[in-house]
Amino acid sequence: DIQMTQSPSSLSASIGDRVTISCRASQSVSTNLNWYQLKPGKAPKVLIYATSKLESGVPSRFSGSGSGTEFTLTISSLQPEDFATYYCQQSYNGNTFGQGTRLE
Amino acid sequence: QMQLQESGPGLVKPSETLSLNCTVSGGSISSHFWSWIRQSPGKGLEWIGYIYYSGSTTYNPSLKSRLTISVDTSKRQFSLKLTSVTAADTAVYYCATLTGIGGRFDYWGQGTLVTVSS
Image (cartoon, rainbow over all chains, first blue to last red):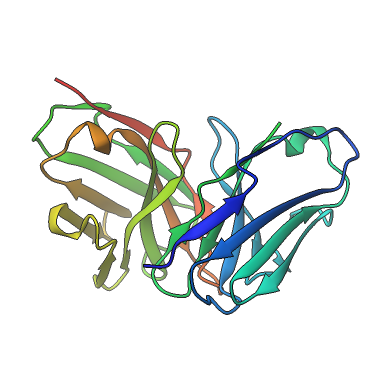
């Protein structure tokens, strides 16, 4: 099984901050890495797919990078609606999610 | 815009079977992969498994022995059955689909909480 490890597990930030969340895979997943945003009581939302492709309708302040085992989600200028929990997911071999990063 | 809605009992007794349905609207169920994902209290997301519209399935190995996912295209529904549940199966259960490239789950239901308790 491919294990996904996110860091940090929680993050305090302010409006306008640049925020970076990391995701590490236990073995290479090539670029088969996706990012999601979860808010309580709402349907989860995909932000980034295939490492760096922005999902339709997602603001351009979100971006993704990486390959192999190291990946990053960046929010260039944090907005009030971005306070949520973020998950990475590998789809290279089965599907595995990271443990989440709570942005507060 | 595709929409998914989970339905089923919110409370299941230990050792019994958890059964959930997901109804699809706004798009065709006769294509794509249809998936179940859960989030246990205080924990991260766990992929449960998915079914292709044709009926072929892929399950999380950790749940495979207790799991059945099926699809009924005439009802525009797909279903989850998890047998011999314990408190560890208490979670918010989401249905989701993969319609595009990259193996991403691009449409999700809002989730339904299932508690396993006597």
